[in-house]
Length: 154
Image: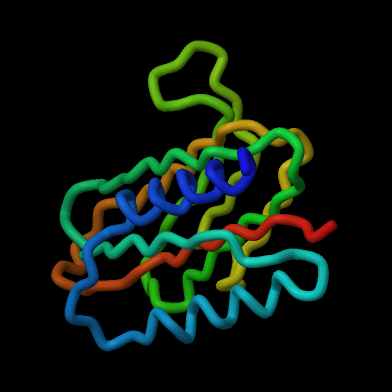
């Protein structure tokens, strides 16, 4: 019962944090489906978050809190197939501005030709995902980064 209540709370938090859906030319359902395939066979879908960005002349960022339950194993996945510009995804152990904040995972779009990224944290505790989109002269171009989380079955 306690575990179910925690999962409901986690799902509710992600619904609140999920960015509003915009009119776009990309299929976020297909992006999520691709990530769900990466959960099989050992992980079960938990929740997801889609962050929409429009390129601007100033650096953009977003931070998302991801509550993690200590008795579970998780797989965090990102799909950047519909984001044509440079980006950085960093996962921290503490929120922005905290002392002794450590990077647990980092990826730069300019350093890879991949579009699916997977992180399996060793120690389960609340994490903070930070997206950074550098400034660009290319304005008005829209894209999204899809985040999906699964937990280990059994």
